[in-house]
Image (cartoon, rainbow, N blue to C red; front, side):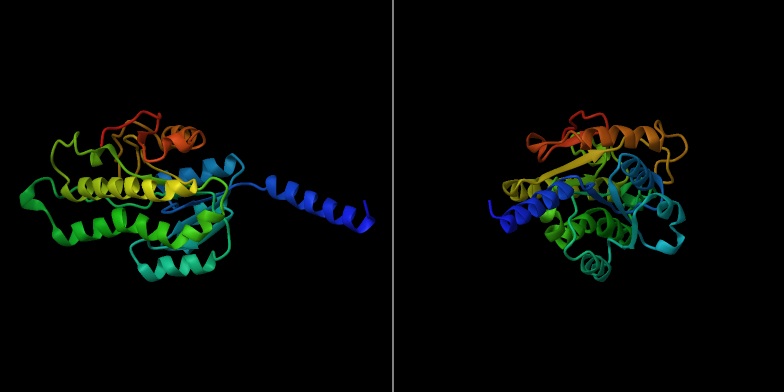
Length: 246
């Protein structure tokens, strides 16, 4: 082999080996507190490169301590999502965790449904994840895992509905449908798209009486996420990997 060709081959092999050993990149929305912050912490502990988002990065000091990069993002604001996509242009994202969400507990009966709040709940919980996936699709296509994890809830299960919380339940049911649709379309490209239920978790959203700590919930979720493969595309599972009825 000619020396120049040998050198070129060595450089290619070395570059390929270095790329293969690079950490996977995960982007977590709503990562400044609660489950999102714990996601960032545990992904970082496992050696992932973590991009965490917050509406106000200046106040996300706990996130900054564990994430490799903190980005501003309001998932309900199209301009904010577009700006994030522009800042991340050309970067590969292996795993996207759409975690940002809101839960108004006031609509406990049909008489108490607040339609303005319901619109905001859909803007964040339903349209937000779809908007983020659409904007970051070029980044995800560059990634190795091509994994989209949308945070749902068993409260979004239509067959399991017991009433109350019209906005939250319906926003998560709609997110489930969006994810299922997404899985059918993007699965052809090797994507795995799932919705997951974190359990009833002690956070500002879940309340102090909830069953699980953020550490317990996210530990289970990461165990599920790291095992996801093509056969899981389009599933609705809990943090223990158990299927939840739609």
